Image (tube, rainbow over all chains, first blue to last red; front, top):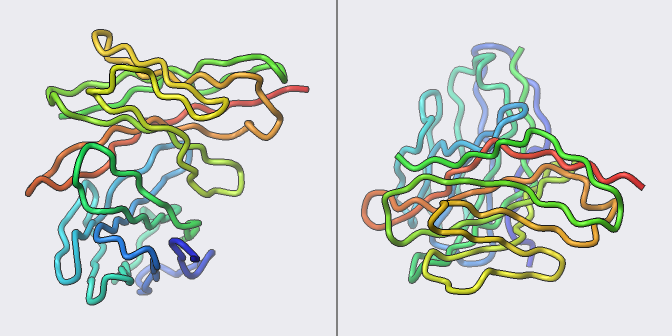
Length: 115
Length: 117
């Protein structure tokens, strides 16, 4: 059971380039999330998905796109990279809400630098 | 809007002593959940402890306990018998219900804990 995996671990992009951050989970979780963490700050939600084919915007969605074609995978796409997108990106997953407890399991993160 | 406040940017503690990391929250919801995560220098997010708003007793997980004071809207993390490996960034987070009954986490800015030998 690998949990939540993310690739790549590190990436440097030039302004205007595009890339896809990969995220996969093998826990059969319905919920998946993408967060970004700027230096010295907490995490902010970019996009989330409550199941295959269903995605929605979080707090900071501008400049990003997502898709969820399977339960396992939730890739994050940056179309035109900007220096403001330099950050650490975390993918997370959790079970569906059946009550009040909803622990999120996090991937190891992707450190992205845009120059 | 819901909000999490961690007022201590950094804390120091001597090894084997206890330390309290502060967290206050703001919500108008009756049902909510509070989480603490640890982020070591390696960067991963590690779940530590959870407290539900209707839980009558304070949550405990090994050396971690959550001092939940609902009237004060505080959910402080207490680490007993600190170890060098406890040096990390600690985040308090609250579950927020979003559209359709689904939920997300709102994170505080974090507290960096340094444990000294």
